[in-house]
Image (cartoon, rainbow, N blue to C red; front, side, top):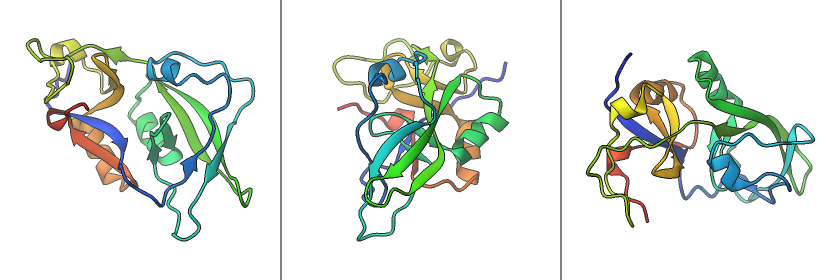
Amino acid sequence: MNQFTSHFILDEVKGQWNIPFIGDIPDGIDMIDVMLGKKIEVKNLPIQLPVTIDEEEETIYPDIMTADLPFFSKKLKSIFDSLEINNIIYYPVELIEERSGDKKTEYFLAVVTNIISCLKSGIDKSPILKNPIIDPTLANGHRLFRLGEEPNLMIVDSQLKQKIETANLQNISLLPLEDYVSL
């Protein structure tokens, strides 16, 4: 088994104002269930989501959006697929711009099914998680997972980070886990 030493939080770049704002999440999609890696029942695919864009600026459709739920672009999904990352349940999503009706179909709701409690012992977890460090023996070689001690965090290993960076994707943040402090 290949052990890795560095872990990163996979997220969107915060404070971007020229990306679509996702409106109401359809009934039946529970944000907590998604965060906990539970399979969701969706009656109609693709999931249709209204989005609002700021017409004063050029809109960028990023490769990840995580404000309420994790949405991955087709490009990000293809990276994970090519590396045989198989602990994600994907649901196709159609982003529909509310004013124009324009549709973007290259997105997926991404439910990461592995939640792993794997912080090194001695890490203070309450009430603020500060500078966490993964115990690789507890991570058990998983390359993408949600952190059991703080399941809103999606964690990737250094190999995935490198692949994401070389793919030149937009609006993706890869913060070293050791630099994280919860609020």
